[in-house]
Amino acid sequence: MRIAMVAGEANPFCKSGGLADVILPLSLEYVKSGHDVFVLVPFYKLIKDRKLARFCRVGQLDVHMSWRHEQADIFFSRYEGINYFFIGSISYFDRERMYGYDDDGERFAFFQLAALAWLNQVEGGVDVIHVHDHQAAMIPALLKEKKADYPNLATAKTVLTIHNPAFKGYLNPDALPELYELPRWLYDGGQVRFEGMVSTLKAGIIYSDKITTVSPNHAKELLTPEGSMGLSGVLKLRERDFVGIVNGIDEEEWNPATDYFLIKNYDRASFREGKAASREKVVTLFGLSDKGGPSFGLVSRLTSQKGVDILLPVVEKILADGNLLFLCGSGDSIYEERLRALQERFPKQFGLYVGFNSQLAHDIYAGSDFFLMPSQFEPCGIGQLIAKRYGALPIARATGGLKDTIISFDGKNGTEADGFLFEDYDVQGFEWAVKAAKAAYSNKKIFAKLVVNAMEADHSWTHSGQQYLDLYLSLMD
Ligand code: GLC
Image 1 (cartoon, rainbow, N blue to C red):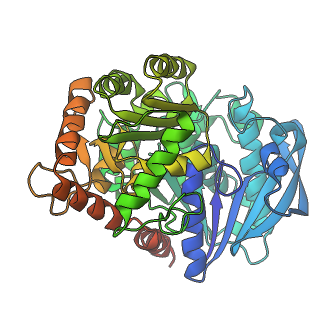
Image 2 (cartoon, rainbow, N blue to C red):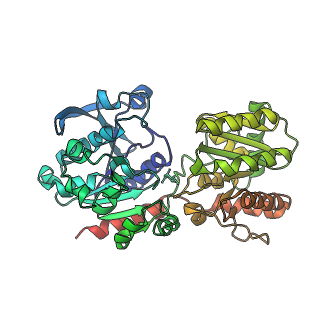
């Protein structure tokens, strides 16, 4: 098959969150099975600046958005067998950040129109266009409503994956004719209307041939009024074409036995020594004093989705009890400030790094006994998968993909268990799980069993990659 992936970000070139972590290993899985893969992302300034690869300019397109005409420069780079096409534009993408500008609606309209026009020109065409989240979700509607513009894509099938239902891709209704050259009746008729605005995510749900989200449990949640962030009504309409496929992790990148960031590599036979070495490294780095006992780690965006509201009182308790805490993350400034204040109160126990630091993230996964993930909602979650592979037991809320990927310890013999789940989104629930984790830690035999279970769990992309391929195949006739 010839598969195109269109997204706002993709490793190894540009990343703000878990979406980027999915595109690369999933594409690699396709390459391994002999498929041709094209990944299309914007040519952000940061991609140029980082000079991770050589980019050659392979084309130029004139993109029309009613009265606006903008030129798109298409750049190419091949990475581990994947064909990356970058949509370049000085005015839209030569900026400091990837997202977060007032004209994001216009920037990503340009991106999608250019991506589609480019795919229409690619020799040999494509069989599947797999779009991800709201930044690419208008493509299926464009393809179906403006068939005449894309004659070479007449048989291409479309799949939308919802990684984060909170982001709807809102646009003013006038954007339909002004940016996409689509008729306004798509709004008036309700196809793309959501809460009085155009939503590109809703357009994707209506127009894609198949819709997926990133875990089976989150697919269930998205069909309920409570767990869908307003999308259950429209997803119900497409229920027969909607499935959850759980994410994996790149098991080569995330492997404590070969990880070159780690001070001492380890596997399930040597995790005690390996993890102790990383713990000591992090303790020294932050100038902490280690009095023994369990260490807690967290690598996360600091937003309300990630549960920082209930995290704050619980980490205060963890610190007051004399434990070590390592945290690397950035996000809402109010959370950053409150964490800094806690760090000042517990300078010898709390290692805090505000920002993103790959080296430190690897050290934290390896140096922690437990990994905190009290998310309010979590379509899949990647941190818990990495933590497990590094033998840090997740303490997480039973929501979305966390429920699908963690087997909670029931306090008995831990036959299969590899973490701790709590149900309700509140401080008491989270505290209860931390207590259960500490109790398990105090029983050496049980704790070792849980760690080995976690490290042995299969979270590779093999199975899920095949599920996506089967889904594509089901669309071919
Ligand atoms: C989003 C979700 C996260 C998921 C990731 C990749 O960031 O919030 O749960 O793991 O996308 O699909």
